[in-house]
Image 1 (tube, rainbow, N blue to C red):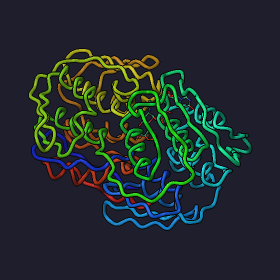
Image 2 (tube, rainbow, N blue to C red):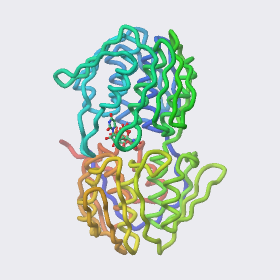
Image 3 (tube, helix red, strand yellow):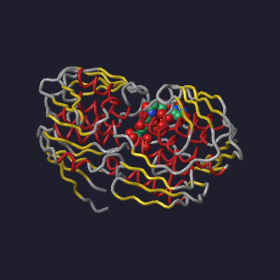
Image 4 (tube, helix red, strand yellow):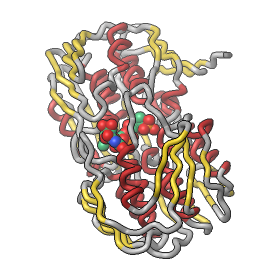
Amino acid sequence: MDKFAIRGGNALRGSIPISGSKNSSLPILAATLLTGERCVLHGVPDLSDIRTMLDILRYLGAEVSFSPGTVIVEARKIAWEAPYDLVRRMRASVCVLGPLLARCGRTKVSLPGGCVIGDRPIDLHLRGLEALGSRITLSKGYVVAEAPGLVGSRLSLRGPHGSTVLGTANVMMAACLARGTTIIEHAASEPEVGDLATFLRSMGARIRGEGTGLLEIEGIDRLHGAEHTVISDRIEAGTFAVAAAITRGDLLLEEAPVEQMQSTLSALREAGVSVEAEKSGLRISAKAPLRPFQLRTSTYPGFPTDMQAQFCALAATVPGRSKITDDIFPNRFMHISELKRMGACVDLSENVALIDGVARLSGAPVMASDLRASAALVLAGLQAENTTIVNRVYHIDRGYERIDAKLRAVGADVERQRVSS
Ligand SMILES: CC(=O)N[C@H]1[C@@H](OP(=O)(O)OP(=O)(O)OC[C@H]2O[C@@H](n3ccc(=O)[nH]c3=O)[C@H](O)[C@@H]2O)O[C@H](CO)[C@@H](O)[C@@H]1O
Ligand SMILES: C=C(OP(=O)(O)O)C(=O)O
């Protein structure tokens, strides 16, 4: 269990290369189960979540290799059951459900359960798969699904807060091998769903409409192997953009997916941060004083819930009152109590945080509770006086490739310390 020691106060300057997207890579890796042929994926980040997904693919019988950036998967013969011990390690593993059902005609996948960011239901995934003709039962913590032949259908994935990202991925993957045409209304339009559609098309799938909320999938008998490069990680890029802002620094984020970051960039501009698209990426620079801002998370192209915690850290350092509301995961505020231990002034009521910025946070030992909360604590530590110790950084290693090395390369004083358990 590593921890980070961060001595804050350095304005970050230089360039940071942005890695491939975790949230794109995970469903795309699951999609390789749809064919027995070889799939080659480039730009896959080296993260613990990715290694967990590769373990799941191996457990299911696929041959997998991972050399820097490139994963090769060949799932000639596969098992149809994904057990609790593997699935519980990462919620995104639920997206093997659609591919296993489509390829094997039946599957048994452990229910992922909730997590520290709140309840994480999968009722919409199951409703969508049922609409394609599968019979689903829940038994002893597992989803058991059977469908000797999936059949295309018209269905809606509208949930209480809009659509579902992994639900859309699951139903879209299953529909690729269904008989006939599937229309998904209220499909998620997140770029990661678009990237999955691009990969599936390169496997021979017939998909139209990604990004529009209305997906049309014409089922075919079999998919073939393919080669694909995953898109850049808009959340990693957004996190480093906040690192530039919170240290009042100047960073070039190489290969940042500018088009997909518009709501994050608008929030930065509202705070008075300078944002400029350049040929090789995105330049973010900030000078004191910044301005307070308001934001509310929503589905794409709205402000991403995965950036909410990082903006809480930024707001804690901006004079005046900022207001941050999370409508997607109303309980995703575990970082607030830790930020308060660093001197942040926050009034949290249900899913709304009112944050009164202070000139300087103060370093303290803090505990990372989940992936983006950990990122927020690292960002706070970069601005704080003295030393911040962020414990349990295995959370951050789930989603940020070599974050400590990338930050050090632009002037941050961050040291990874090994803690023997
Ligand atoms: C829309 C959205 O921002 N999705 C985020 C969500 O994806 P993830 O796929 O994990 O979550 P969903 O997109 O499915 O959830 C969106 C909303 O729908 C609700 N819901 C979801 C599925 C379901 O079957 N029933 C249901 O009610 C959820 O409680 C949530 O309020 O978390 C990921 C990790 O933080 C982010 O990368 C995604 O961008
Ligand atoms: C919370 C995240 O991932 P997961 O859905 O795998 O928990 C995330 O990417 O911010």
